[in-house]
Structures are given as C-alpha cells and as structure tokens.
Image 1 (cartoon, rainbow over the protein chains, first blue to last red):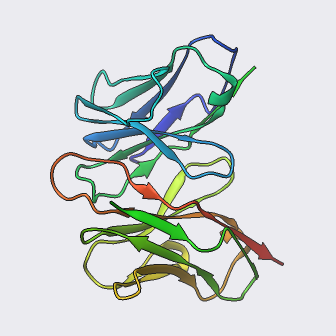
Image 2: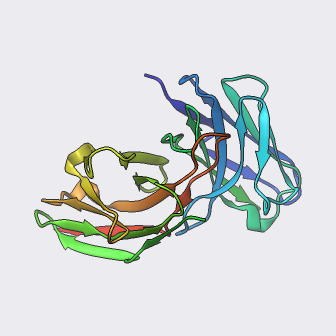
Image 3: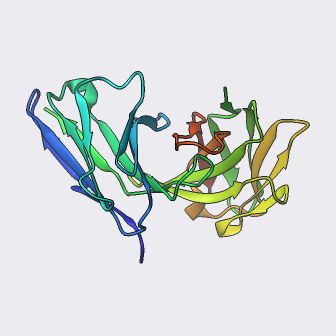
Length: 113
Length: 116
C-alpha cells in the first residue's frame, strides 16, 4: 500500500545533541511537510518542500532544518534540541496545490533528556 | 486570512448515540474543508473533505459533514457512536488556490469520549 513512513517511531536524545528524524513516501507526491505537535495541541507547520523548493514558516526556529534529497525522502534535523522541543513530529505529503488533502505518517515522538 | 474554531474541546456521548462535533470557519475565498481524526500516539487520518462539490460530504467510518456557507459551519456528525470512535478530531481549512502549496489551518481539536 502507498503510504508515509516515519522512522524511528520513538526517539530519545540528550539536551543539545543533534538529532535527525526521517520520513519517506511511496505516494510520489510533490509536497512534503513537517509538523510539530505538542501534547493536547493541534499540529503546527514547521516547513514544507514543493519538489525541491523549501518553504519555511516565519516562526520556525533556526534550530530546525530540513533536507529533501529526492522525491521520496525528507529529513528533519534539530541541531541543538532543548527540553521544549520534546513533541510528536508528523510528516505529511500532498499531491500538489494547497487544496489537496494531506496524508500523514504515524509520527515520531521525540523525548529530550 | 483563514481561521477555524472548534466550538467544543471535549464531547462525551454514550455508545450507540449520535455524535456532533462543531466547527466554524472564516475564509476570504472559497475554502476547502477537512476533518481529520487522530487516535492516541498515531498520525492523522483523513475522514472527509469538502471542495465545492456537494455540500453534504460522506466520509469513512460512517461520518459525514455538511458545508453551510450561510452559517460558515462544517459540523461533523455520525448517527451512532462506536467505542473505536474515541479520538481527537481536527477541523481544517485551506483557501489557497493555485500557486505554491501551503500548510493547512487547524482547529484546536475536539476530544471525543465514548461512554459504554
């Protein structure tokens, strides 16, 4: 089945130690998104790629970076995780334009110790 | 600018009774509207979407929603709740048309509790 896959499902990192979360998709969608979701809150968009074009949300901290080496894969890098970065990180894809529905992966729950 | 208001943070119903989750939106253009469900520690799953076709939209798992432009509402309903419906529900709006892709605007979510 076509799907959005996130690895790992659970990630523990130390305060200040860089961490990378990965997302892959078999849907061949043009757009890939990264969201941060804290407990009992709605997902918050960090950034997205339309093909190779990177679009950063204005309030996304510089500590968060992303890479999309090809259509199928997208990575979220947190350069120096703080305790406040502990959250669920959701990857999503869509075929194209803003009206298209997004398909979400299962998420990676990040714990910062 | 677009916004979404989910009127109830928590809704509790008994199994077998109807479900109503309320959503109001604000949009400068003709919006697309979505309902997503999120079970604990899982990603979001699309329940249904409205994109300017029929105003009554049927989704998965027996859910449906009606787009009412005059009331700027997109309430989610189900005739008979099941225990497996217990989850967080997000109403989402997008009024971007053409051009590049953008994220969606999420409501704050409604936590649905099903009483046995």
